[in-house]
Amino acid sequence: MRITGYRTLDTVQEWGRPVGDANGVFADGVVPVPIVLVETDEGITGVGLGPHADAGTVFAAIDGEDPRAVTALYDRMLRQTFKAGHTGAVFGTIGAFDTALWDIKAQAAGEPLWRLLGGRDRRVPAYASGLDIGLTDDELVAVYQDYAAHGLRAAKLKGGLDVEQDRRRLTLVRDILADAARGPRPALMLDANEAWSRKQAVRHVCELERAIDLTWVEEPVRRWDVEGMAVVGRGIRASVASGENLSGLEQFRPLLTAGAIDIVQTSAVWGITHFLRVATLANAHDLPVSPVGNTPVGLLHAATSIPNHLVSELQDLTAPHGVAIDVHVEAGEFVLGDAAGIGIRIDEDAIRAATHRRGATAGAGPNVRPESAGRRLFVTDGAPVPFRHRPGARQPPSLRPADDGHARHDLDGHARPLPDRT
Image (cartoon, rainbow, N blue to C red):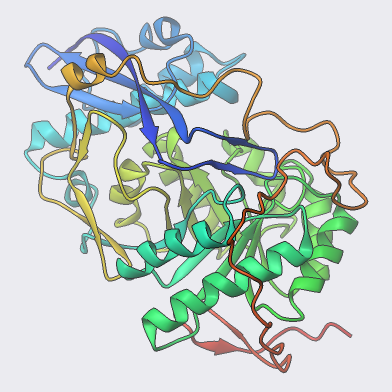
């Protein structure tokens, strides 16, 4: 079998509501989704969801090769672009090609990738993640009621701009998930998307922890700030999670060596081989890994085969336009199917027919860092993502009393002692 060519497509994810984080919001809820298709001389086509920046240069490393030599080809792609390929969009392009090659390899074997990689169980624990900072309280409640109906018992909210707003919204979501579960306490996470300084992070989270048992805080400071992550981790009870915006292993190594993060994350767009290598590095440090991304199906397959997977992010409950995925959600878990490969099928006619749909515009949304990020004293009307109070919006409920300070809970609801903060 030989690789004969590639094609690129662009579709969209239509959320039907504003989505974003502390850095900005896509007001129309339409987010671009790039796709890479890799073709072979045996008629098998592999699919990778991710960037296709400088795709021609990356493809030159694998053109004419046997696609089943996936890990060797991954390193060839890195070498082909070694001055730019370990970071940013080009690294994402390598990840998209890598995912497509794994898809081909599993299709050629006639097996779903989770089985080819040695996974035993097709079920992958999930947490809800609504990219929800632009929602009113009523909208937030409706979104997480839908997640709860699918059995989700853990949730990550976007926040970091207003501690009172974060406390109110985390309480709302906690109550929704707790009422649906009638069992162990839900796991709650907060994602600041690098919006804080070190002191802001500790101050904000410590205030929240008076009323909320946070499982982790995600990207509290800049992704490369090893000392800052460690400072935050020592100052709060919650775990510190980061890694979705890190790429090469060389970026993870200083954070893990310093014990600066507790939950190691990796983005779906960086590819499967990268995820497996990061998971191995994390496991050597006795740390769990957690995939992040809107359509992390490739990493879900890979997650079944590693010993230190914790939980995977579930964002939208629908697939991008023109994309069908052999996975469903039940009882709070992704359930992978039996389709050979990673189980993604592309309807190119449907994608072409939807070219009128408007995607994210340049210079707007959560991909643009606000000028004031990391140095806000308090929230003002000029904050990049003002909370939209609407007539009839849900009024803040009375907050539940804080925990007694002697226990925190894992994702499964089991209590464990808190560190002594004195």
